[in-house]
Image (cartoon, rainbow, N blue to C red; front, side, top):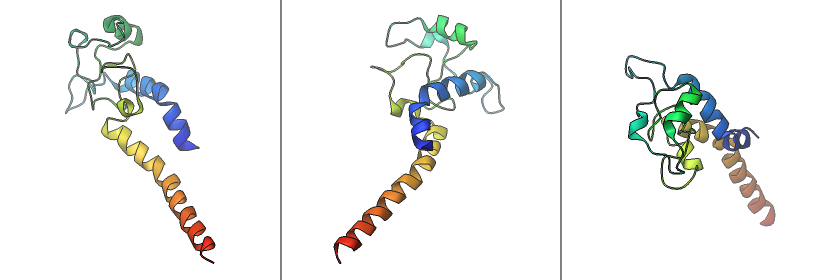
Length: 120
């Protein structure tokens, strides 16, 4: 259930986390977690990213691998939003791996049980 909530809620989680933490300066990231100025980014769907960032109260967009999760302001790469676009950060990959562990293990255990039962 948690994996489904995480995966289907990725656009919302990305918006909440990146809007909240993207511009917070840190020692290692003086501009915040996201470093792309609006002049360096073009939305692949044709929307104006400067207006979208201003509406979200942000000054910068997240490049690939930046932010808590991938960028949700607008699709930056060719095409539209994707699962891999949201989990392309270290944090996103870690959360996805952690939440996927028990369902995958459960599948393996259940398959092993089926094989043992069918062999009887």
